[in-house]
Length: 216
Image 1 (cartoon, one colour):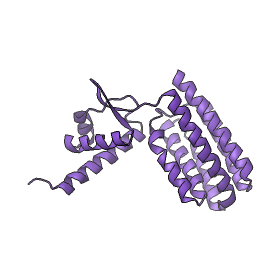
Image 2: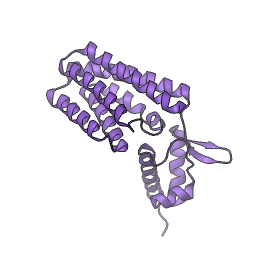
Image 3: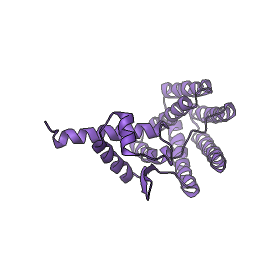
Image 4: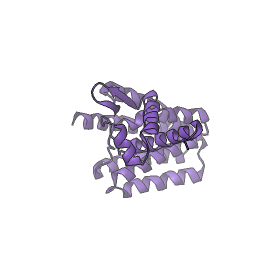
């Protein structure tokens, strides 16, 4: 019995979600080829929903098609990375400022706990990166501003295209956690100006490190 359109669409959605998570988790890196048969075999899906998922990812700007290569995970160039971090800086500075005005003690305590978890994950860069994302999301949630949160979500696809995490060594994690602590302290003290300045310094440092990694 043939599956109806709704069933096939459901499989397409499943393929899209699985492939998106694989890219987000670093299973597929920028520049990697996404052959339908290989992706389907890895995710136990037929080629039709995989093809549909690849089309959606292309529409989202996550995947691109190149002659003789087919679908690949898009890689950001130098200019795009700089532009992305410039936008992140604006959003995260604003988020830190607003969190300093609105965050409750439980949210600030959670930021402390997440930052400590990042510090403890020095041997597991993937875990450190995942907790780092939670840390920044926690700040956005503390702003009580749905539009700022939506703006941050809009950058998620681009952030996936940055490539491997830079939290791969103890020195880098130490810098990140120290800068996170500056942000937390300013939020706890209810100091929007200091919180915004700390967030800006953090993003500037992150951009410099990312560009250094890109240069090799």
